[in-house]
Length: 214
Length: 214
DNA sequence: GAGATCGGGTAGACAGTGTCTACTCGACCT
DNA sequence: AGGTCGAGTAGACACTGTCTACCCGATCTC
Image (cartoon, rainbow over the protein chains, first blue to last red):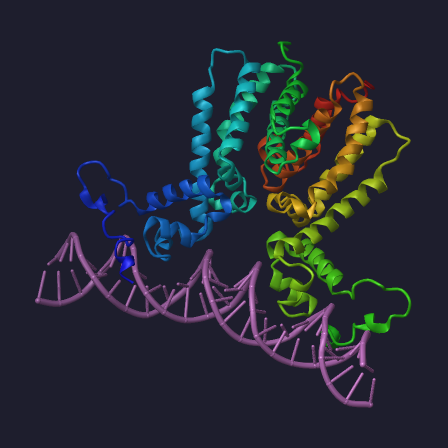
């Protein structure tokens, strides 16, 4: 049984170096979240068991409880990283100089691209039991994104009574496409696995035909 | 409370009567599905553990395995009942005499109403791990519904290049609204919990403003 | 009619999970 | 030196899904 001699938590502990940088609370909390993000991206949302995360972080299964009193809170912290990354992708792609219609299209593309490339994370981010447990404040994380979308919609359709409703409808449509895509039901509509045709139809429907400014 | 004296599996076994009618496979299989449907409607999708279903059906936890080799297959059988009920509701509400636009609106209303009143079942029906395990053939269950929607869309927008894409976009939108509704994010868009305004906007967007035939 | 077969259900084991609790251990403070 | 306390360990508990051996009673066969 000497093969278990090196896989313990002996040597990856240079966090105690304290040589200037890490003024965080020691590191385990962030390490758990980081391991969780890697795990959900690599193996999917169902792989995010509390014990497995602890295992990969090199601590005992009871350790996470110090920082996350329940499994759901750890998952929420991981999902929050997902929202942060999505917001970063949107920020990186959104050019304020282009026309609102194009910005919405780009935003939608980023959104669907995120849902496609970060499948497990996307699934985790919108798990209703995470969003529902209100105190975790996960739902509010998507609020700035929604506000940006609402503003753009208001500029594209200035005569609309309630831009938030239109933006909500568009957002719901994006979600639905991602959903159909994820469970392979896109073939029913488009015959293929590419959400692009659906996305084009959706933008035309909600914002008017392409190339038409108002 | 002497009515609790009969909730065991002692006397409800007249299946052996064999007086003509029931040539089904004995009854436990259907009893499990029935108990599962009741359970998911009463307690939600997360309550559908294999052992709990067996417990409520009055059999040991190993019994379901005779009919459903895995938990997922039992869940699929339960979800199939959901699809059947949804199809029945649609059939009951869909009047072939009315205008296609109104039929689509009615269909969408039935759909969202189902998602609202049968929340747990709706969640179960579209669990991706159920739909993904292809051999169970659950995804195909929604195909006739989708075909009907496609036909109606083709009649409302006869000039469209691909009615299936439009129908897919509309279907995705319904899914998205149900999603937002379920996790309470409708307030972001409409300020309330009623999906009706979003639904109206969605129908206008995909089918053209109301009252406009084509 | 007696004996074998076998479908259908029981019961126990196993590994895995989330949560709770008692404990240990080392750093820090007085 | 002694006490405190944060941080992580380790074991228990009640669950879960799956697998396996068993058992019982009805049916079929000779």
